[in-house]
Length: 227
Image (cartoon, one colour):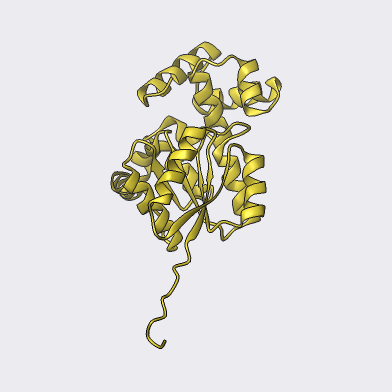
């Protein structure tokens, strides 16, 4: 009968990439409570994520920054190259005041801390799917303040702003107390490459010895609630 037709809402498909099964299950349960979103699939590592994107063709991807076989930055860059129009939202425990900016530069469309309310994750997902970008109000304010600072003041906000993404990752893992062999294994690179990164970090941070660098890295991690 005319006038009785109902319009079916097409749910947006979300792929979740996180190496913790409990987190993936929690996000899946959260998506199940919405009328406009659905779980497209799950992955625990970079290789699994790339296969899942090919298979499920999601409308967006949620990515953690610490993955089983690599890191979220590498995955972000891979996705940005292969599927430049596929939006990615980072969902992570890592310090948003420092790391969010790097993920946005790598191609993410938003960043939500795992310490936030679940409703904020849904808000972030919807904002990104709508073509916008999403960060917390506190982070947005801090980024605006940094933007309007004088160049000299901005340069002094963080020693580690001088480091590349990989160098920062090495610096952070040094601060967590990992020996060179374990650090190399974690990043899937050789010990020689790790040592090369360490030497570059020492030069950029103007550190004279590996012991001094270790002390600085530990203090940095502890100041950000890590370690």
